Length: 271
Image 1 (spheres, rainbow, N blue to C red):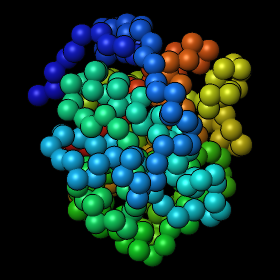
Image 2: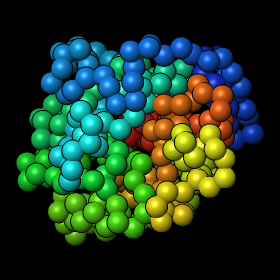
Image 3: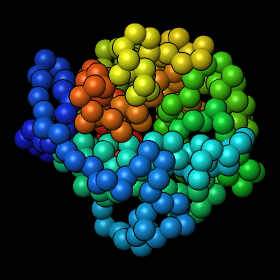
């Protein structure tokens, strides 16, 4: 059973029903954490892959992309700082025994099956190999859940949709119903908030990118109604986690991003 913890050092407001817990302290992240730095999935400094015994590892999908971005690729946007800061929040808000650091895993790595959830960003730039498609398909059909985040507009949607049609042929993408348990398993989420990137959030005004004007939370289910893929389109949870300690980034966006992220994790671990 999940344990409720006392207020912890996270600069967010967390709403559950009518109860609000103010968590107002600001943690300090190591100066060595850069937006796209950290380590590669083959770098033992990123995580000791042989360390076991924790209840949850926040696992990030490492995938092949259309065009290379930075040192590692599009999969590494906001990595590893967003992963680490989200894990701080997850452990303090839920009591889940989570490993404190990032865990990048290739989609064609058999190790992927050790983890109940895998997180993928910028999926509009995916260009999966056949081995990656097979690995992801086997992972999902064996019980895993994929959470995708931070992709915007019609072009990126079309590319992601094409990739999913090859990973899970015949499985339609549908809107997640408002009464789905994922939206109520830990926090009651009555609306889907469009979470902007850090630049737009700091500036105020519009929250959308490209032609991604309206946020959507969608899913892919198997024939028995089990949720395989959670799709957070036209929104950016990762930036809200990464910049949660920044007083110039609006707190309501970080608030929602942590709530939805926590719900997805709790749902994945309990289903």
